Length: 200
Image 1 (cartoon, one colour):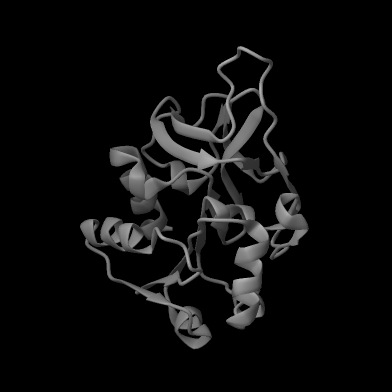
Image 2 (image 1 turned 45 degrees about the vertical axis):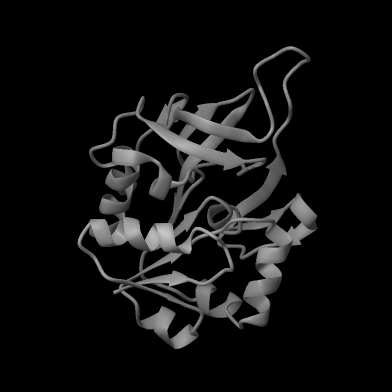
């Protein structure tokens, strides 16, 4: 069973449907014991980092998430809060991966570098490889992004793209995985990433 943490995001149902299409069972839950028992955990996220962390605190989920030893996948904001902190609302995050999430920088006037980074982009046009999440995925495959902040660079970055600056798209540290894009909205490539997570 896959536990999808109820972080208050609007994308819970679409993630559940994507998992169901792969033949796996999932449950959306905020119960620490149910999350701890799950074979795998997905941490979705839509909104702001400070708000998300406050919600996890109220639900009593911060320490239980930090203690997880099974594979955990953070999606979009769910990936960003795996880090130590975020410039967004000066949030103190889960601290599972080193570094601070920072705001994307707009391009020069007249450039096509817009904020938020929204729409289709390659999954790994700058760097690519080293994570089981990428099994069967090509670096030039396109996935769907909607975000205004970026994870820090480091050894945990397994794929990245350029959008005026290098943006990590897949990260991993131990049993904690993260994707900046929305696999549930990314067609076949998104399904491949989720399917790979189910095999981790």
